Length: 255
Image 1 (tube, one colour):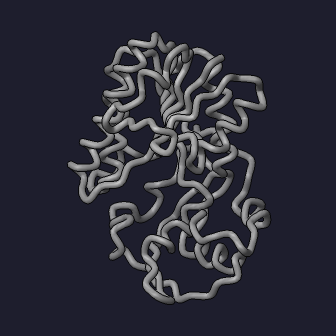
Image 2 (cartoon, helix red, strand yellow):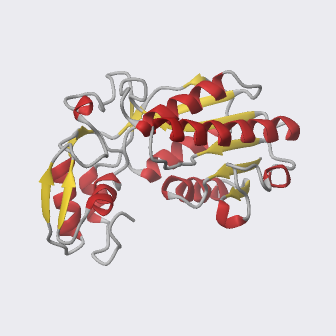
């Protein structure tokens, strides 16, 4: 198959591209660095010529919920329009477990908008929701760090390996559209603050971590088991311990 991976240079995108190429597919990596801008539509039509299926793992950042929704809406509508012109047969979207549970989170609001537009659009689709990645704790530290101090929300998460997500997406895109797929999660719950400490230790860093909701990442509405997957979720095999053991002590924080 000829498959376009939207956001193919990102954390999950790189793994997905690697798996697909290993399976013999013809892969088009769509990213701003490759001259294609999904927010404006620039270069999309040319990128999708002859494409059979699309995997969308893009991410956007904005100041508030409305701006985030606007960006996700623009990108998704541009994609679907270009896919319709190219006669794409399957659109696979990576979304987030619990996206419909957190009303006050700007990023989740944007992902809900993305799901809604895709669900009402002209292209047969599959939505795969996944939990936070193993990299998430390190990313949060990178976002909130000021000098030798970082604030980390005291979340209970069920992190999944980005490589495992890539495996699932690569397998899914070759099959028939499924609508909303079974949620995907890591094998066990973890405390995000503890994950951050262990990530820093594995990379040879020692900074002060303050458990706090006052960092803009998540609010108290995410407390408890809100971010965990349900009992019906598909569990990926890679534990956080196994992932952490493979990390280089020289890797940049949040990579």
